[in-house]
Amino acid sequence: MPKEIEIKFSVEDENEMLRMLEHIGAEQISSGLEHNIVFDNDELRKNNFLLRLRQYAGKNILTFKHTIEQKEFKEANETETHVSDFNAMKEIILSLGYEVFWIYEKERTKFRIRDTIVSIDKLPFATFMEIEGSENGIRDTISKLGLDMTNGITETYLELYQKHCKEKDIEMDNLIFWKRSK
Image (cartoon, rainbow, N blue to C red; front, side, top):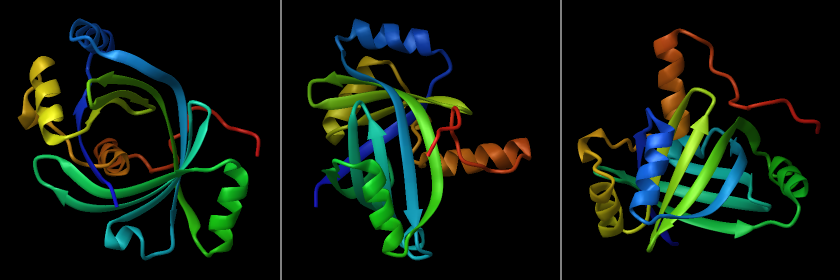
């Protein structure tokens, strides 16, 4: 199972971050709305597993992850596959006894810097930059962007949203930009 290594940073000024990415030679590789459905059966999350169905940049992707470490970076064993029919895959997963746990969307713009992927993710409650790749590639990108590693975030978007809701004393809900027809 391939390993995913990543870290996030809060983005206060998106335009400044985009200028910095351009300055260091980052190549934009995609942009658009990303729609995610996270499934659970009372066992997955409890054991640090994630089962997610995603639509982004004209692709449907089924992901299974097992988070293994959250020290300097978030590390997970991850297997992904492309799915031709999003709704059919959703129905298969539901038929297997999983339930929709959470739905979230984000406006994502992805960049490539050599073997490292940098994503600017605008969620309804905040904007983050996610850096994914090898540990050396991530460190090099952090250095080139002038970021402070101590400000790195290893929490998931769900954990960040739960924290946000607690701080604002609001009820947690799905994070969607607009209602969709089924």
